[in-house]
Image 1 (tube, rainbow, N blue to C red):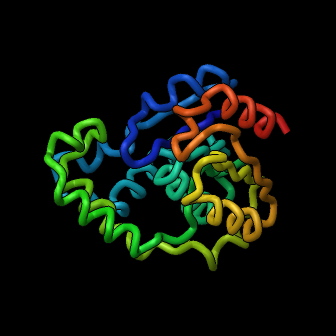
Image 2: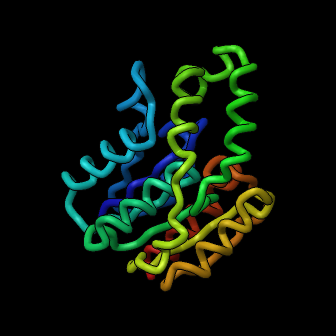
Image 3: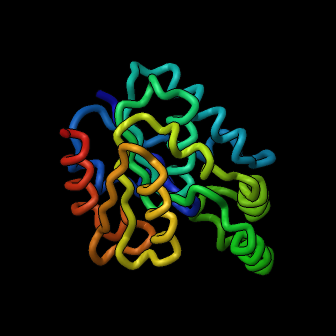
Length: 204
């Protein structure tokens, strides 16, 4: 069985290195930003490339995503229910906080370009990507997620705790777990605890 680990904005595939070591089976950690580097970055383009790549793999898949990666995994599970055996969503919103994104982009505009290097995207690409996500809203679709789902959130990730509760309440086969001591980047803050939670979930 193939498990795909999807990183968040501000991360790259290497953010999963520690957690991936504790997982079983074939593990894939794609670079989500590869399709949009050097061009007009948009969520739609990233999702379309991800969905196309998934279609080329033996299915069903196990999908696990953090933040942006979780949004991609959630949309794929909604559009391709037969292709997803299990879904794990970490620090994932089901609707974009438009006000927060606008403030975030205003701050991004003030930062020097070098501040974005670790994201693997340019300043303009990051701003364009976040702008393209403004209208995403999956709240009305959560009841259509048919696979077993594990909703995870860092104990210190206060910004996403409400979203975690919404996902647990809205997805029929969802269970919720908090990762002790972790903030938003659970895959970096608590990779061993995350790997253990995923192992138990996928085995079940």
